[in-house]
Amino acid sequence: MAFESLSDKLQNVFKNLRGKGRLTEADVKAALKEVKMALLEADVSFKVVKQFVSSVQERAVGEDVFGSLTPGQTVIKIVTEELVKLMGSETTEIALKSGNEITVIMMAGLQGAGKTTTTAKIAGKLKAKGRKPLLAACDVYRPAAIKQLQINGEKAGIPVFSMGDKNKPVDIAKAAVEHASKNGMNVVILDTAGRLHIDEDMMDELVSIKEHVDVHQTILVVDAMTGQDAVNVAGTFNDKIGIDGVILTKLDGDTRGGAALSIRAVTGRPILYIGMGEKLSDLEQFYPDRMASRILGMGDIQSLIEKAAAEVDEQQAKELSQKLRKAEFDYNDFLTQMQQIKKMGGMGSILSMMPGMGNQLSGADMDEGEKSMKRVESIILSMTKEERANPGLINPSRKQRIAKGAGVEISEVNRLVKQFDQMKKMMKQMPGLMGGGKRKGGFGGLGGLMGGKMKMPF
Image (cartoon, rainbow, N blue to C red; front, top):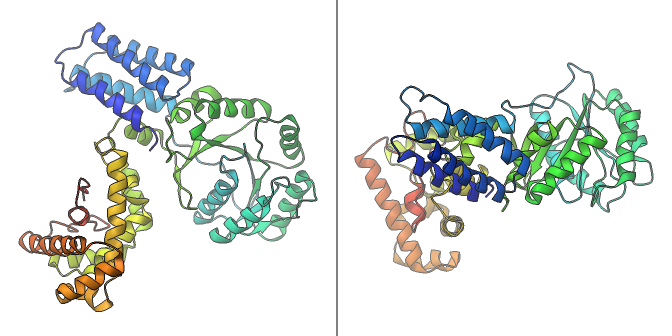
């Protein structure tokens, strides 16, 4: 997960600071030296790191203690504020023209950054906001690029304009705008050709499109996994064609995350969205304050709440919550909980947003937890409809059949049944413990059934 190593290192630095009742200038300088090394290892631009550390040191050394904060907490507060400032302070939306005026958005980027998929993701976001987008297939060079856009467009329910691969991209872009105008669409998103590296001819092609079409927003898609190269690419594209914003993809991968901390400072252009997976829904608005909170191990509860609100069916959650309070839930309800967690990006995604959880579990623990969830799901799906609805029906012979169907040892079935029964008893004794109150989603009890090291905090 992005920033995992950086987050761990910074939290260790702050842990040492919190333990001190009074900070000297030497303490601050020693701590910032560690912060500097952590940022450089995360592939943050050297110039950006130098400026960042200088700003923090200048504020921290001469800073009065804030109210009830300790000196250590004061330094952490300053680092948090400077991190937010580094990434842009404010959340930036894609600028759109008002009413039925057509907004033309040109997507650009290197090959392999996920530009075509991201183009469809953006269209889906705009459609959800009430816009009428049209995708335009302007990549006439890469084999299957047009087909890929059409498939993604179909998944997102967005029309795709194509003239094949024998026409010039600039002509396709002009025709797409005309088509949108005639058909009542108010956003045209141009999926332009990617490039393996900065290529003058293709840069000229982008410039030509901007000269012949009224492009309102030029958005660059960069792969966060390329680290400092992503920042260099962003700088070059900005110099050559001018960009209005950046979308960082693959931030869910094994990336050091330095690009997210450097791009705004180097290009002066905001990060608009971050890609957190392959699905068309895996695109998150970029909030500098929330990202700083995640990096510093403070969690991101607001994003978690929003994700739950978007993915969890409210009526279904309410019914499940009532069942949980009355201890009347069955294996069908438990399966529903697991599916809700999957929709929210899995346990890894959820735990990364929980305060203090980012560095509590290793990658191995997370993998084991996800595998455990899959085994539990297989066991439940191997039950008959009657068994899922009436857990009391499950006897030794049925357990044998369920284990065989799920491809697991009978001991795993026994453990699931035992923990399920224990959870129901516990909730009868403590009504409202799980799924109660106004909390949406009702994920209560999932942790106890996972077993092993993976204890879910719900």
